[in-house]
Length: 217
Image (cartoon, rainbow, N blue to C red):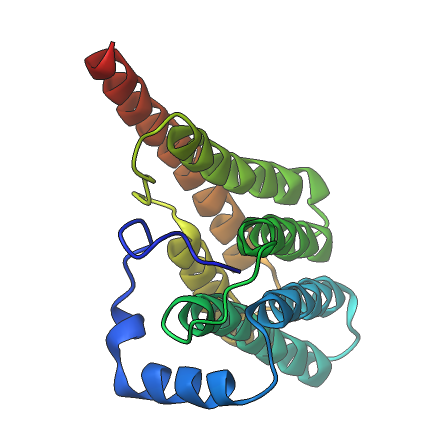
């Protein structure tokens, strides 16, 4: 990826941490490209979605606990890939011509894989697809804003990092639920939070974009 431009990137505190900068320098020194890191983010999302899905049909508490731990881990690895691809591209100077595509496309695939996976795992695929659809719409409105000459709106309440925080927390809390009652209420509530929060985010970003466009007119 080429990044979003140093003045139009998602504000992330982790980008300025020593461990992230050291890891980015390490990745920059290798033959790994930013696009390959973006590809890896889709793989991590696929593994997270599969883990969520299988955790709902797994036999035995132990197996379900392991799958939920893996789901949380892969969600965070997806975010790590999202962080590193931009740092390697921009700070490492390894951006590629087709970077803008790989900057956005994998994130949309990842949202679909993870939230649809949760939905199928709790036998509520409709809710999972709804959460995925609204998640994709948040990015659509942001990119529409940028396409019309406005700054990217990374506002919440359910931006990408917030969605992954909800999914990760739900996976870890579901471990307690799996051992206690074997239910799936936590993941169900998490999907509702993501779906509703993403819908609110779409409305807020749309309102901001319309205001910017009218101001220009």
